[in-house]
Image (tube, rainbow, N blue to C red):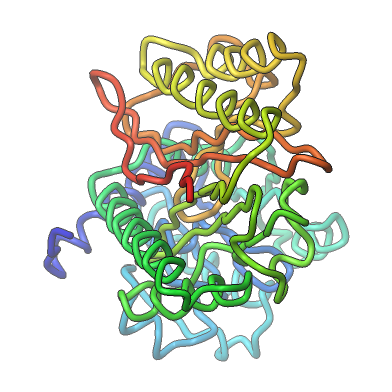
Length: 382
């Protein structure tokens, strides 16, 4: 991965905050408040500052940004901001912290309009309104917080670099899994799940993107097996699924391989071929010339021709969250196109209680001229 200097990183985060400030100015809003806590995780916090979690961020319309972190030491080491104020100064009370920072807003020449997070509960919103009675507080579903989400849809250069590195590490893990199967060191679902955990840490990842889903033939009929993995044989004769992701500098990959082991029935072979066909055909329309609705409809058509139905969407955006906007589904607006900079999964799958399950999932970067598949999962036949 490209090495970024501290100054380059500072500029990356400043540009993101200036985009938010531009929205605030255009809409005559004085400040926007973002809150990340155990009650609600908000990826806007790491997106705007690089701080990992548990903090309040207030962006004023001139772009000046206050970070109010629970972990002051970690924020000083990793985050980017204009001014840091420790959360402990306000006895860890969100309302007191927000009120205190807004009261210095006059130094930024802002007006009294403030947008609070739309994910506040109604009782909490009322508490904020009471405490901030000198301000014109708004709480809008389609306001600055949605604008921030929209900014994250198409990734910038740094985000793409992080996703590429997560993809590279994921591919390396798959190679080690294949080797472990052949060497006999991977025999169970637990074996493969723990290998992923160990390898991702050794490769410099933050963590896994979600709890690894490893399902042998007796459990692969489930879209998301429960429990996520057990001590059952993996892979065993039949169809086994492995769904995992790794997080590099906050950005997660998402991959699924299917392992077909031993002699398969004609129905199992047909299921494999259908998923591969859907993957190949839908990849062709993961381009800016096509709509997201078109890709999802193509997958549905392929399966319908064989009198089968996929029980989940064709894919979803990835980034700071494992499931980001947009979903690749027929339920999205019919005129929503794939756009350069989007990174989305392509993951057709079919599941049957007697045959087992098949899913093939890769991460796809949409480019100006088409797409680039940045992970290399596949159906593995043993």
